[in-house]
Structures are given as C-alpha cells and as structure tokens.
Image (cartoon, protein in one colour):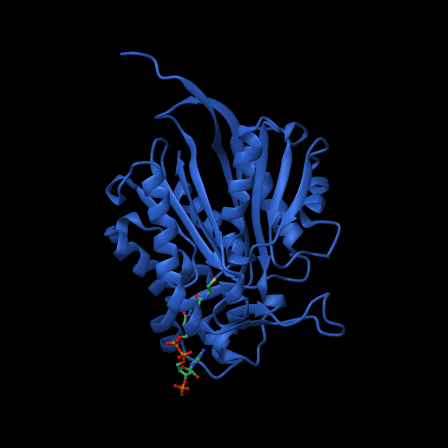
Length: 327
Ligand code: COA
C-alpha cells in the first residue's frame, strides 16, 4: 500500500479533571429555593452539582486539571508551550487565570491567556490551540475550561441557580506529524450571534460600578435556539470531513441540559450509548463541561485510541461551535 503523506495535527495526549469536594443534591437546593428534585430532573436531567470552597478558584481547579493532563501525557511542565484558559469566572480581571496557572504548574516557558466565550469557551480554545500548533508557533498547548459559576449565581432566582455547578477540565494538545487517517483534531467550527446577547448574560462586572453581577438567563429562548444551532455546527463538521453521523464513535456534547443533549443526538440518529452524558452528576459547568465529559469517557475506556469524537457546545453570546477529534 502507498504511504500516506504526513501533515501536522494537534493530537490529544492527556486529559485532566477536577470537581470540588462539596456536592449539593437537588434536595439540598430545595432547602435554598422553592424547587424540587422532580422538577429539576424532569426539565434538565440534573441530580447534583459541585460547589467550590473558598480556596477552589478557577485558577486552583484549572491547575489541578492541567497538572493531571501533563502527567498523563508525560510532558514536564517546563516543556509546555502555552496555556489557554476558557473561563467566564476568572480569579481576577488580570493577571489572566492562564498565567496564574502557568505559575502554579511551573510551566516557565509557556505563555498564556484567557478566552471568554462562555460555555463554548473550551471548543473556542481547541480551535485557537489547533491553529497555533499547526502553524508551528508552539509544540504543546494546555487547553483548560474552569469555572466557579456558584459565585455568579443568583440564589433568589430558582430558574437559574439550580442549573449550574463548578469544576475544571483540561486537555494537552501536542503537534505531531500524522497520516490522514491518524489521530488529532480534524476540524473546528466556531460561530457567534451577538444579537442574542441578552438571552444569557451576567448583569454586572467591571463595566458596571458596584454590581458584581449575576447570571441571567431566558431559558426558553436559549433552549429554542440550542438544538438547531448545535445541529448546524455538527453537520458543518461532518460535511467538511466527508463524514456522516454513522462515522461518529462518540458525541461529547456540552452538558447543560439532558433534553438538549438528547435533541442533538436524535437529530444525528445516534444511539444513547454513543452520547456522553455527565450533566446529572455536575450540572452545567460551562467551559469545563466538555473537557470534563471527555476526560470521563477516556477514563472509562469509551473514548479509546482510534475513536472519532464529535465535540459541541453553545453558550452566552450566543457563541457555539464543534470540533472533530480522532484519538
Ligand atoms: N423549580 C420549580 N419550578 C420552577 C423552577 C425551579 N427551579 N424554575 C422555574 N420554575 C417554574 C416557573 O416559574 C414556571 O412556573 P409557572 O408556569 O407557574 O410560571 C414553570 O416552572 C415553567 O417555567 P419555564 O421557564 O417555562 O420552564 P421550562 O420548561 O422552559 O424549563 C429550563 C426551564 C431553564 C430548564 C429550560 O428552559 C432550559 O433548559 N433552557 C435551556 C437552558 C440551558 O441549558 N442553558 C444553558 C445553555 S449554555
């Protein structure tokens, strides 16, 4: 057989995950707001979430997940090229959480920056890392999604505070010369529609004096857009690679809501066993949700070497996107 030409790809070589020790069940939430386990499970599939302790900041959790990813890949921190952190809940406006993490890891040669794209942040981060690696700018990039949404939730608003949780997930991507059928990111697709900015946002922050800001969401509106936009992102990924849904071994969706996950899976005609679901265990962890789901699927063996994974996410902005990744 003729040898295939080699090209540079961003290959996943390690993953990591961190969830705070404190778990709040739906029953615990019902003690804080007028809600019930039945309502939350029926509408969202969520059964519990993790809430960070004071020391578990976005940087702390992201560094824990990042360290694991480096260890799994066997890459010493000093050899790391860059850290990209997707977060909407950074420790501070600056320095960037990525740079805090760079110091915590001892990744002395890495540069780093934060990326703000809400729940799509990790997929956006993969896309940026992919471009940097294929351009030859760096040889390795840690892409981390880390969030402490418990600190921006309005605990007077039962329609939002039961939906989110805290956590961090990380992947290490390394530039490798591979054959066409080999591992790596095959494509990423990113989208945004800022005209929908007011259906999911934070009503404060540094732009508004004396208002730290809480998450505000018009859930029905978000839901109305989510399945169609995500299906579009997924179909674009398949079309660009001349693939069909049947070629996908595992869908790794953003974990916001079981009904949205099922809706996309159904549109693709994927059986439940080919869709990774973690939302029942840690609710919506925003930019951390896709890397947490990915780390779990790799850990339990569902996402094994050679498998083709389709990642997707949608969040405030609106922003959304997809990534096709062969392990
Ligand atoms: N517990 C109990 N009742 C609640 C509740 C809660 N936590 N939150 C809302 N309700 C009530 C409402 O007050 C309303 O009562 P009413 O009919 O007496 O006015 C009723 O439940 C229905 O509210 P509604 O907002 O229409 O519910 P819904 O079926 O649209 O479900 C969401 C709400 C948020 C679960 C749903 O819209 C959703 O999942 N949206 C997508 C959100 C998402 O995933 N966003 C993240 C994207 S990154």
